[in-house]
Each structure stands twice: as structure tokens, then as C-alpha cells.
Image (cartoon, rainbow over all chains, first blue to last red):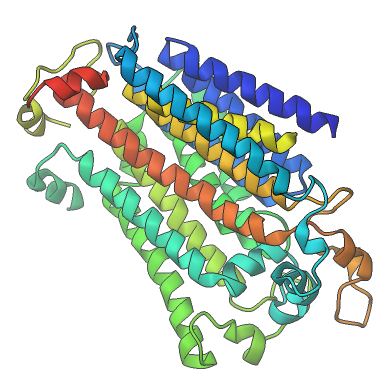
Length: 183
Length: 163
Length: 122
């Protein structure tokens, strides 16, 4: 359990550095450190699927972020926003933080999840009957592709649409050149 | 995006094949080991990104041009929807695992098991890999001005610029 | 206490979105918030001394087609893992969309500063 605290402190410190530093390249590298710490946490929390996905997605996300910041002028921006707006925002953030801390007293303690006490929880039926209902040994794969296949269809649609939108926004060439590329 | 030195080019030509093979392994065995379609698809895309960083964008665009990548993306999505609709035709409800329940149960813990789950994994892996490769190729083919800011209202001028 | 640290990470990301002036910093704050939320969901399903929800050869009794009792009593929750798997890949897609909008804004206005962008009319 101590390793969880160490990793979370590492992630919080990297987040503070990413937010406060003035150079954009350093913040992008600190976001990479947060993602790497997150992947280690997932591995220690017995979720190997998620750990693999998180580390490769974080590497590609870093490449996309660096593409936007490198070799572009005006990467040093100083000063803050106007004073009154910032005070109001910080006050609202403080209220949200205190309210959130009170919510955590009602959550089940770490390491003793609710589904362990309920016999008719959906997770219990997935673990018990996953192999006989679907035949897959990886229960997470059987959940995303057999029991909850609609969510995967929705996710494929969202990914498709967002990549389509990003490609259209970045298009600088006219239609003639795209047709030239196709031949 | 220009290429790098000779050492980087040689090593990444060998390593790219290993990364591609690793991605295919994670997709195909997604119902037995951790991984699945999403992680494997992202690994496939990142093998091509490695090639793009080491050899330059023009080399990769000559091998896997942009229209082909977008057609692979659409093919993956279409394959996923087809597997779901076949579940409706043969099984009675959308997304039914009709291969496992009716025709071909297979042995547990084997490669050929779990019905339509490996087919869906392959479709999702193809789709995610082609999408992410497409977006990084498009991001790197923008004309980059090193240290020169555009004056306001120059959006129309950038349309007429060459790649 | 671990949940409170995860919530602190989320609040740091929210602070970055609300207070900072640089457009890429706002996108970085959104990425930090997404990491914090995914971590919180996986921490909800953890069981002390648990195993990953993947059936190996030792968990199936030979000849009988159901899983052993020690797997059912020790496996962690597979449902949050399925939801977070989808969420991680979607966050990459939305990051690509946001960065493409930022690049376009830079090409048109010449700066990433949002107070300047508000004042210029294109």
C-alpha cells in the first residue's frame, strides 16, 4: 500500500510542475511523467489491459502535443488574467474542493469494494459465468465485446467522428490536390 | 518532418517490424491474454509513427498514402458493424455471439474459441490503428513556419500554399 | 486518503483550465483531469490481495466447465476496467481534435494567448 502513496505523490508533484512552469515543452514532458506514473498504478491495481493501453496512448498523446508546441513562436506567455476574475474562480474551486472531500467519507474503504458484499451484483455474474457464456478467458474482453457491445460501438463512432473532424480542420489544400493524391 | 541519422534509420527499420508483430499478437490473442483490440491498434499505429520520425514523412507517405489509410479505417468500422448485424441475422438480437452459441463453440483457452470476439478484436484494431496513423500523418504534413507568426486574417493565404 | 490524493490531482487540472492564459496549457489541464478520473474509477474496483480478471489454466477444474472458487473470491472488478479502456482511447481522439483547433488558431492569429484572441477580429 505504501507504493500507491509514493506513486500518487509523484503524480501530484509532476502535475504541479506541469501547471506552473512557463516553458511549454517542460509541461508536456511532465504530462508524460504523469501518464507513466498512472500506468504503473494501473499495473499494481491488477489491471494489465489498462496499463498497456495507457502507456501507448500516452506516448502517442505526447507526440501530438509536442507537434503543436515545438517550433512555434510565443511559447513564453507571462502574466495572469485580470485580478477579480481570478479571485472568484479560486474561491469557487476552494468550495468544490471542500465539498468533494466530504463526499469521500461515504465511499467504501479502499480495498473492500461494494460488489464483494452483494451476491447479485452484475460484476459477480460476469466473473462467475463469463467463461461459460462467452468462451473467452479474458473477462474484460468479454465484457466490452459481448455483454456491453453497444458501448464499444459508441466508442468506435466517437473515435471515427473526432478523427474525421480533426482531419477536416487541418486541411490546407484544395479539393484539386486531394484528387491528385488519390490517382 | 525530416529524417534522422544513419544509425537511427538502420535500427528503426528492424525494430519497426518487431513492434508491428507485437501489435498483431496483442490483437489476435485479445480474448486470452491482456490487451485486446484497442491496445493492439494503438501499437500498430505507433510502429508507423516510429518509421515517420526516423525516415521522414515523404517516405512513409509513399508507402501508405493518406487515401489508403482512410479506406482501411472505414473498412475496420464496416467490418465491426457487419459482425454485429450478422449477430442479428443468425442469433436473433443485435451483437449476439452467434458463433459461440450455435455453430462453433471451440475449446476454452484455445486460439479458436469465444466465437465472434476475435473477429471484433481484429476489426477494432484495424480501425483504431488506421485512425491514429491518419491523424498523425495529417498533423505532420502541415506547412510549418519556424519562428514566423502569421498576420491576422491570413487564413485564406494558407489555403493556396503548397503542402 | 488515496481517494483524496486522486481528487487533488483532478483539482490541479481544473485549476489549470480555469486560471491559465495559454491555450496549450488549458489542453494540458484537460489531459490531467482525464488521467485523474480514469485512475479514480480503477481504484474503486480494487480488492486487497486480488488478481487480475483473466482466467488461467489453474483456475479451471479439469472436466468441469466452471471457474474455481478462489478465482471468484479474489478477482477484482472487471466492469470499471471495461469502461476505462474505452475512455482512454476516446481521450486520445478528443486531444487530437483540440490540438488541431489550437494549430489553426495559431495560424490565424499568431499567438496562443486567449486574451489577445478575444480582442482581434479576423
